[in-house]
Length: 171
Image 1 (cartoon, one colour):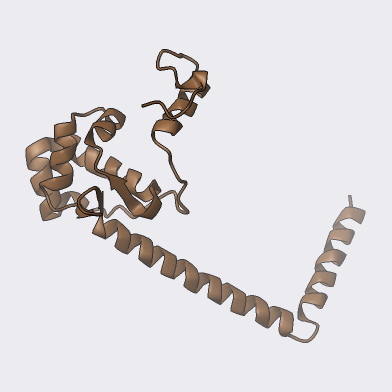
Image 2: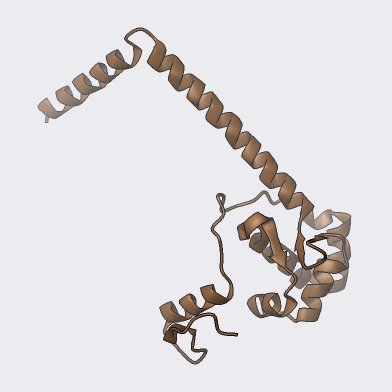
């Protein structure tokens, strides 16, 4: 089903920018705050991942982490169970995607089984947000101490301005 009347959504179009436009209509992506997630160096030895690797080898391992990347970028860290669309995007069979999502206990169904998410990813996102909140509070506290100190920031600013002026005069 076409969601856009633009020529960009024509599947025979060869222009890269227009194809990207069309792709984003089919697979809308909400940019996530972080562009990374923790990848444990021992992830390949997790018992569920070992079972996945026994059945599908490195391909299954790669598909699993591509799904995690997609979940990270998705609103609410959940994806629709549209296995055909996911298979098209990852260039593997829909049957393989379905198996990886449903057979190894790596993902949890939600929304009446229409979507799925990763509990581990959700934990990581929550931990990262909590750490970010703590760092922000610490930075705000440190800034308030500097600004509240008698003449603290005014003197620092004047000293910096004097250093810059002297550096400019010497050149």
